Length: 243
Image (cartoon, rainbow, N blue to C red; front, side, top):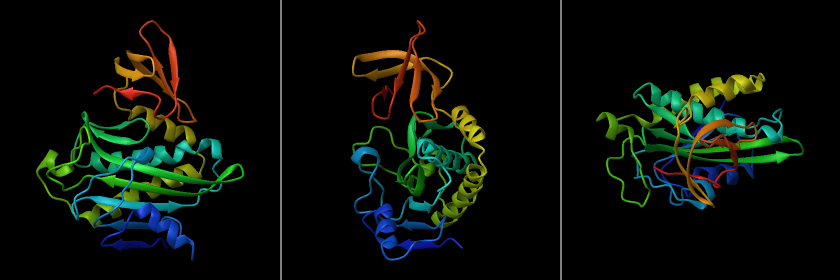
């Protein structure tokens, strides 16, 4: 059975899993959550602000060795959809900001760092590090637009209970993935995208422009369509949303 490990403090839950697996492999679906990360990370070296004991900061390990390496964005998609479905139980207007930030309206409520280890043409191991803002009432860092569930609803949430609720949802999506239901996952992801269906402001290396989301490729590349019909293709960090 998957193991659930609780730590009062660690550098990062992703790092803890990696160090633990040097000695013995964790069962698939096992999770590590902590009250506080001293070196919590976001994408591309960003830090993740989380007040001690207030939020759900955790990592899950899976071994999707039947999934092709060139389809690894599916891991990001099922993680994003799982967080969205968890938050949908409490609030409306939850979307997935490409590639895998979770937004409530125009504010960020969850971020994640997914590390995939490849073996040949398939994925050997995936470690999914996720931080969901649950109970934090004030943010002091320089993040542009954080928000927590308690700020939205005024209620407090049991961290361990929400972890188990997330895992139940995530296991469901992971089984869809293992069954090869790739298109079902991709379609649900596209339907959940932040700012889909309308023109909004973006910025790339050439400057600011207006575009609408045209598609997200299987590789994870974002396709934006300009008003005159031109399609631009972006990898992660090559384009920025103007909020």
